[in-house]
Amino acid sequence: MDRLSQAYGHLLWGLAIVAAALIGIMLVGIAADVFLRNVLVSGIRGIVEYTEFGLYLSVILAAPWLLNRGQHIRADLLGQFGPRPLLRVVDVLADALGLAVSAIVAWYALQSAIESYAIGSVVRRTVEIPEWMLIVPLAVAMLLLCGEFVFRLHRSIMHPDARHDDVRSMA
Image (cartoon, rainbow, N blue to C red; front, side, top):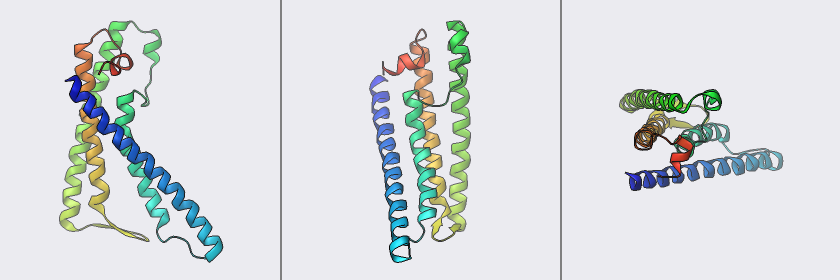
């Protein structure tokens, strides 16, 4: 299971690299658009939409990696004051809830993408993008979050005395 978790971590790292590359591309695209508008009076058609979609994709692609690294948003008030057995229970409950919510969102995103594809729904702005192409990455990201929550639950069960931040380095 540790080797699978490690390979999974590499996959998530690759997606984080893609997210970072998207941010870099958006930065260059916006700068080029500003330059072209000031020099040629015409910028890059659709840059605002591409940037919006890029922001959306970079967030959902990086989310599973951030969870894997323990760099997600976490209210850790109990972690500072609570007894270790209580913290373990809270971690397990939080991971189980995260798994359930991610699975539900993945299911509905997948259903929405299938329906959008079937009816040929398109997001129309300066550029036209099939709606399902924007929904599928959400379903994939939620499935990846599900996978990470499963690994976290497994680590909590196999290493009951370690916190998630400690266990991550074991995998």
